Length: 366
Image 1 (cartoon, rainbow, N blue to C red):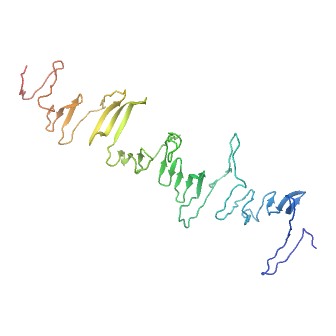
Image 2: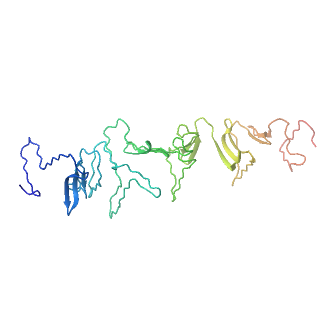
């Protein structure tokens, strides 16, 4: 018999399934530590197979080259290993392969930070070339449903996912893709909401800010936001021109002087828009609660011109009423016949220069 450490065999028949080494153990009773195979060095186990067929290696299990380790086929549980794909090696897995810990990972320390999984690596590239911490290369030959190369769930609810079209979804923040961005804030518990009344903050640390394309529209809604449901839409009308519009709904812009909530709203504001009078553009001020209606001063650095369109008068008023007008015939006078005074006993006109006629139809010249 050849020495156990120097066995040879010859396989020379294609019709025979050969076995070089076979050990058939009849196990009627044995201790839990019994092994079918135990290879040791200096009395220390380096590679063993227990009675259930579990393979245990004290060190790494390497393939013939750094790029190929081989396969663990037909094994469904009990694997505990560190896979080291050195020198550009790879780990291969078939469809529906579940890579998980031998027992569920539980983070249950009473205090301190814990991490379920960490990918830590160092980049030290001296000359050129990119580096990637994690690469998922997905080849889509046929996807009858929606494919997700990347997805994170919490308690069975998707929190972050990336679909095969490049569309991204963050359930508590919004969604974004190649051509769109949606961000949600508001009370907790609503669809697509984060916390309680949180805000979206953009804080560039350089001279850069938010840059929008020529077709980009800013839209606001009272409910869950969509572009169609937007009540106010602001965008670019043309070069150096901004618009605010919403179909056939008149728009108003409010600028506040004061604003507070003390059981009721107290505020003072100016407004410019179409909502005061139907089909009439209005510039004015208004107030609520303890607020005071404030005045408007028009103070240009140059000349001031007022002009009504052809066929329309220019009308002036005071004390809540329109009382004087410049008619379409360029006649300045009251809005009604013989109902308004030009000056008064205490507010007299210093001089009146008349070119032709002074016509007094009623009353007495004094």
